Length: 355
Image 1: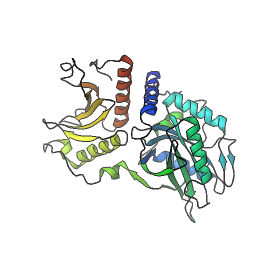
Image 2: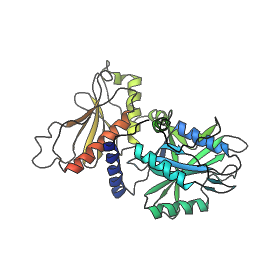
Image 3: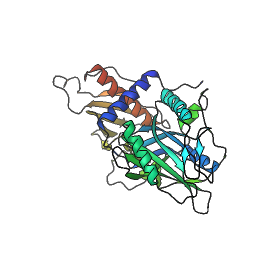
Image 4: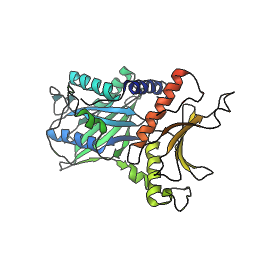
């Protein structure tokens, strides 16, 4: 049987989510992050029902900038109701699948999706908006993502558009830009081996689709930069590949954290810097990167009185992983674990390295 995250990590994420709900309800992102494999799965479900509505649910988490990150697209249950202009999910199927996704991977129910097949309605209907707003307000959620799927005019290509609703928003919604991550969701891959998971698989083997509007980290990273650090000619960061990697990591981290900056230290090392919950974090890249791995350092933004000496050297949280690993996800897990542990211990004094 496949294993999910550790119990300690699930408690960490749950505590972080509670704190985020209490403090960041006004945040609103302008993007929805999703793996291309999950988009294709959604399109295949839509193609299963070319002339009636179908739908399902979206599981993932909310970034610190208020954007939904979709890790798993759930399709319709076996007894879900499909009509010309309505879809009703099977409640027991949703409850069972959602509970397992939460317990194994700490995922939250972040939204729903349904098709308008060939109704020529690319936006939420008034009924859709009323339903979304009632669900938000009844459950005390800060935000909710609704994805509308359509067949393109005179085509079998499935189009997906995402709309974000906010608490007490009166049904108002904002269309988001899809930020598409390459490949398959690691959660879907892991769930394939989980016995007892009430999975729903589309019958259609392949489907063409388009997420509207959309972008990728590669396109964002290729945007012109107004200022660039300088590096020794022998540095990997001085090469086009190295600069591209630095900006890609910067943009990936910016999707999850606010005000990410690229900084260069006096000794020439470059870092990605951001603040969260009163701490400054820096992902520091050594001169010999990628042979030598980067590290994550942190210190309080305002050092408590009496601790100046102990914080002269920042705390090293972790020696980061190899190139090709999901560096940003590991950074987020590490920072969240540190902050929750710090909150539980009630101490700002440096402790042994984590990781």
